[in-house]
Image 1 (cartoon, rainbow, N blue to C red):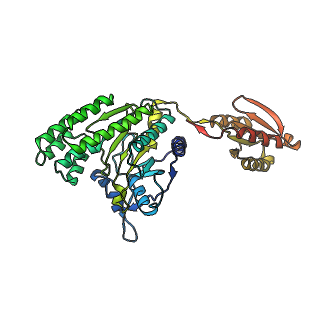
Image 2: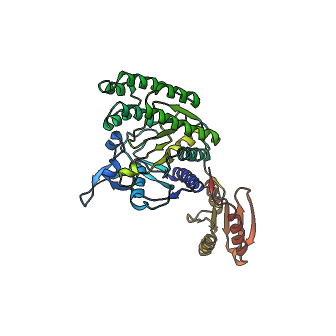
Image 3: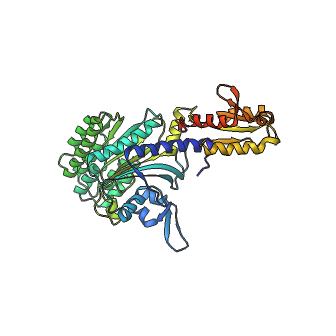
Length: 430
C-alpha cells in the first residue's frame, strides 16, 4: 500500500472526476457500498486465486468478514436485496479503494482504486456494447490514444466444456489456468475427462486471435462446429462487435478465442484494456447473468466494467512524462505586507471564499518578493497585496501572476473582479 502525495492525489482525483462525468453522461447513478462485507459474499464467485489474496478477519461479533477485492459482488447484493423493485435497466456507478494481497510491483498494489459501471437488467448485445463504449470514452478523456481492447466470450469455452460433461468446479479450475496463460496445463487436466475432439477444438481455439475481428469470428465458428452452446456464444460475440462497428465507436479490438478471466461469475463477453509497454490491464469486465440470482434475487442479466484509476494514471504519466493538471479556475493568494494588516487579509479572504473563489493567506511571514516567487511555483493565478498605505484609502493591489501585471483597485472592486473571473471555469483539465 502507499501514500499518495498531493500531486499524485490530484492526478487520481482528476481521473475520478472524468469517471464521474462519464457516469453522468450515460445515466449511471452512484451508489456507495461498504468497504467490508461478509466473507462468503465476496468469496462466492471471485475465483480461487483471488480468494487466496483477500484480506479476511473476524470482527468483534465473531463474523468472518473481508475487505472488498472488487465491486461487483457488493453491487449484486445491493440489487438483489434493496433494488428488487427498481425499474430495469438499472445503471449504477461506484468508485473507491479495493484490497488484494498481491505481490507489489509496477501498477499492482495491495490497495488500488477503481471506477465501476454496472448495467443490470438487459441480456441484449447493446448492453455489452454500451459497457465497451463507456470504457472507451473514459480512456479517451484521459488523453490516452494507443490502448486496445482484448475481447473474448467465456460462453465459447464453457459451452464446449459443459457439452463434454465437465463439472463447474473443474471448469473454474481450467479458467484460472487459462487466465494465467497456462494452456498446456489446462489441456492436461482435460485429458482424463474430455474427448479427443474437445481437446483438438480447444487447441485450435487457442491459436485463433487477431485484430481483424470478422476473420477471427469466422475461424471461431468453424472451430466450434457441432458444439451448440459454443456456437451460440460466437454468434452473440459477433452481434456485439457488429454493434460496436455500426456505432462507429472506433475501438481498437483484438479478439482472442481462448481468452479467460479469473473471476468465476462471467457468463458471456469478457474484455480487458491494455496499453503497449504495460503488462497489466487498465481495466476489464464482461457479462455476468447469474450472480444476482446467486445472492437471492430473481434471474437478472447484467454486464459491467471496472477501470483502474491508479493504473490509468500510471499509463497517462508514462506517455505524457510532463503531465501536470491545467487549472482553468482561479487560485488566489492574499498577501499582507506587515503585521498591521493581517486581520484585514483574513477578513478579505473570507469574503472571497463566500463568492466561491479559492483563496490562500500568506502565513509564513515572508517578504513580498519571496511570497510572490513561492506563489508562482505553486500555480497561484492572482495575488492580492494588502499594504497599510493602500488600505487607508480602501484599496489593495491585484497582481496577475501569468501576465506579471498589477494594478491598484478598491476592496469592493477586487472582490467583484475575482468573482467575475471565477464564474468562467473552475474545473481542472487533464
